[in-house]
Length: 176
Image (cartoon, rainbow, N blue to C red; front, side):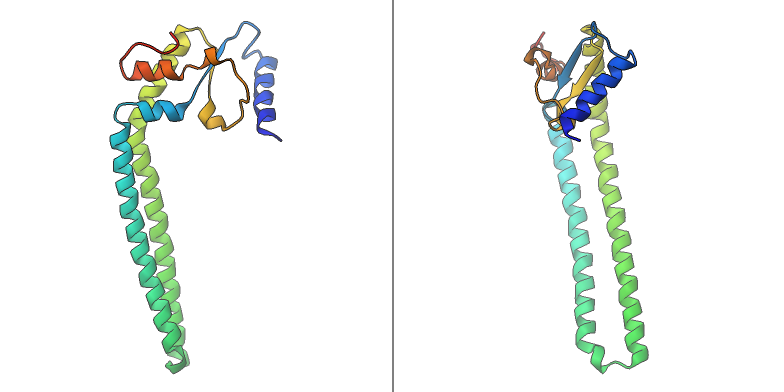
């Protein structure tokens, strides 16, 4: 099903269930732009990038150790007894399992760190969006960044992005 059909289906369901009606008003924001313009984002983003690089470096080091051990085994296996070869294969398998486990841990830490750094910013954004939605008596505010093409056409006067950015930055402006 095409993305626009999904969005249309959502709106039709909302109309059908009474969640929105002809008197309902909607707006939209581009959360990517809002997040990037939020004070504190640049610091959080650079901190996250540094952490991700550290995690990548550790994963690369582990990968190199594994590759080195595998290469050494490939060169030595013909000289090993069957029992020693089996033991070495088991050791390499365990090393691979430890590598995968550590990689999974590092990926989890990246996700946790991202939530830790971005959650306060996202909470602030959500509070401002909720305030503007209530102030303008809107039923729904869509996020066109999250939709990635779901909304293919919209009245630009419904775009609340610059208003949200100005409120988050503590300035006046936007579509007020």
